[in-house]
Image (cartoon, one colour):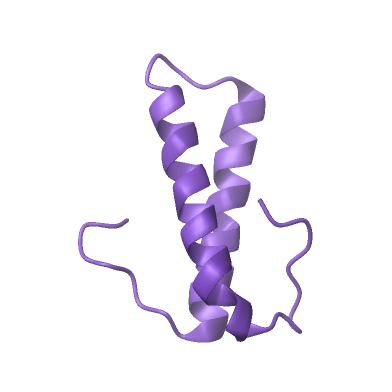
Length: 67
């Protein structure tokens, strides 16, 4: 997870940041099939927000099958 994303985010980093965030999100989702703690839910939300921020700022569409 990235620490701070701001309006000055450099989209040149998206090619490495986005796959890393997506991988981290997938791992966390798979680890929580039996249910997520409140802390895990917050981490999932933060990861999703970071992914959405990068996609929106850098105009990156969702891949097929992604939510």
